[in-house]
Length: 248
Image (cartoon, rainbow, N blue to C red; front, side, top):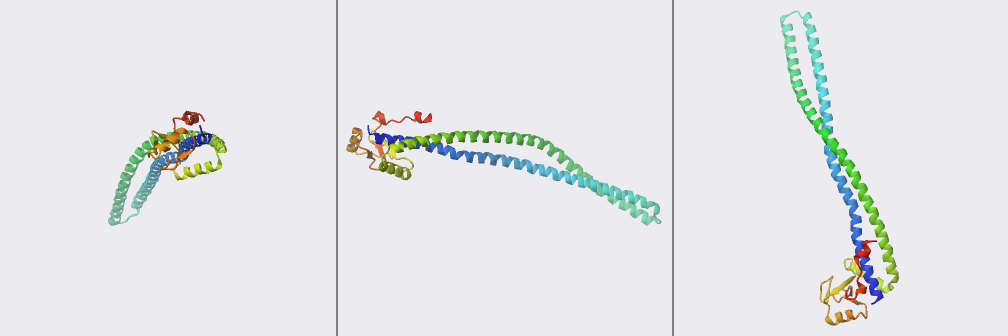
C-alpha cells in the first residue's frame, strides 16, 4: 500500500464530507431569511388590516362629531323660530331643518355601515393577532434551533479542517499542490476509485495495462482522461469509511 496515495484518498474523503457540511452551513442563513420573509409577509397583512381598522374608527368618530354638529345646528335653527316675523322666514327655517335631517340620516347610515365593518374587522383581527404571536414565537424557536445546528456544524467543520491539515502535513508538497489544483479544476474531486477498469468519476475506461499497473500498487497513477489520482478499492487499505468521518 502506498502511504502517499492513502493520504490523498483520506484528504479527498475529508474534503467530500466538508463540502456537504459547508453546503448545509451556508444554507442556514437562507433558511432563516426565508422564515423571516414568510413571517413578515403574514405580519404585514395583519398590520395592514390593523391600519384599516384604525382608519375606520377615525372615520366613524368624525361622522359622530359631524352628526353632533348638525344636531346642534337644528337646535339653533329651532331657537330662531321664535324670532321670525313672516311665514316665508318660518318655512325657510323648516326647510333648512329638513335638509339637515336628511344629511344626518345619510351620515348615520354611513356610520352604521362603518360600525358593522369595524366589528367584523375587530373580530377578524383578534384571531389574526393570536396567530401572529404564535408565528413570531415559532420563528424565534426555529431561528434558535437553526443557529444551534449551525454552531454544531461549524464545530464539525473545524474538526474536519484540523484532521485534513494533519493529512496535508503527511503529503509530499508537490503531490499536495497537484491535489489542490485538481480539487479546484475538477469540481472538488481530485481522487477517484477505479472499478472494473472504469474511472468512477469521469466514467471512462482505463487502458487495460494501466489498470493492471494500478492493481499492482507500485506507483501513484492518474486517470488518462480526467487526470484525477486513481486507486483500486480492491486494496482494503485504501477504503476510507464514511462512518469514521460521521463521528467527527
